[in-house]
Image (cartoon, rainbow, N blue to C red):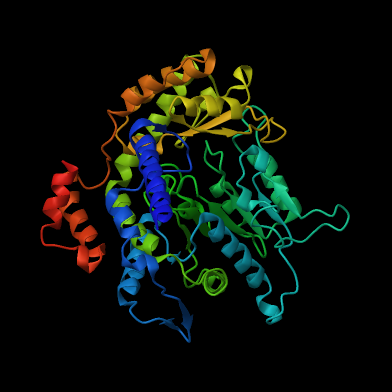
Length: 478
């Protein structure tokens, strides 16, 4: 028993220490991460966290296979409505528990869809797919070595999948070469075109391709993996308004939510894609999920309330901060990717080239040792992620903690000193972070506290609860 208690205490102490370090002492710049609000976190650990709510459409009716799920049914209905408003679309599939799963659901559905006239037996895979090259920012989940594995036909002459990469501009490899892309589409006649990246600086040519293929017999499905920019929908790009058929993404990067995934579609009546949406729902459940993590589902609904309320001001500040950050780093002598004439970035991401000071791995570790959390990144001219030349950063999390353009300019000084001169700036960074501890773009603390204490009290075991719980918690916080 003593050993059990000691291990528990050690783990919880380390957990608290890590919380303090990441939430109060570090500047968090990884572009694929964020911190959810306190109320979202409390939703995540509420009763639905341990429950099931499997359901599927049978004979035109949504059938739930567990009792006690009326509340979850309400949550799902409300969340679909919130996300339909956010995306301006007709279809929402909520059950993926990651962005990568959301992508795989679409790939599975596509294979079912193209074989829909051939009965139940799947006779072939996707004939050809166009995506972004992994080394030029494409996401792993859109690669044959990732989630696209086994869903694309192979070329018998090469032994490789018929996956073709979007051509990029020579003077800015972070932008598509639309002329060559048009030629590629005409040449390979893909059944699926996947836009979206993990190294994401500039808009994708969705409208150009949608206009190009709209009258093409058996036109390709246009998919946009917005994992990194889901929270910037509208301010950065509006794929559905530009002609995309389906949008996937993670809900925890630039979006305010917990770690989940989503599939959104414009496949309503009259689009000719109604059966594809049926396949997407079927591949979500029973095809990919059983328990779809109801705690984070509840948290996502609250996060969607926050996002729909604060969307415009948050998105504008994230992008303004990224551009100011990039300019300040360039002015400090750090090479910033993305093209100066293009403003370096149109998203939350900022990419810097650090090869002259060390590998990306070495510089990322140096920054971490100084409480600046980033991740190393292979740039388009690198052979692989091993010995990479770049560092990838995002402004979304620290924007939510109140940083503005001038603050990112100050942060650029610390980064330049650390990267160029190996200066120890840990103490300065810890002091700097003290100014940014209160989360923005959500309810203010005076409104959060009574709601949070009520939820937390309801979670506690019955023999722990007293009527003075809120009072005792308030004194503890003070």
